Length: 72
Image (spheres, rainbow, N blue to C red):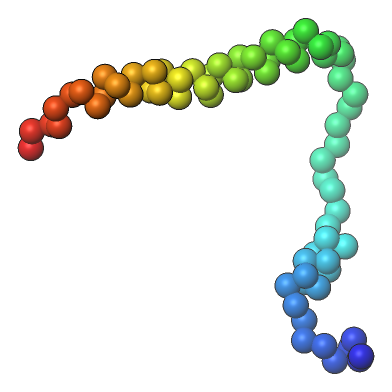
């Protein structure tokens, strides 16, 4: 009802911070355009980098299960 007497909330303080924020990042347009071939190559390398080790582990799970537990 009376917005001046409301208890401040987190969302109200975030709005105040966002309103007072000034961006200091400046950029220029790229010198060379990135084509679809480079984008696909980068995405493939990224996927292999992330999924390769996980695939190796999943592929070798039966070997890991057959091993005896380490002796203390």
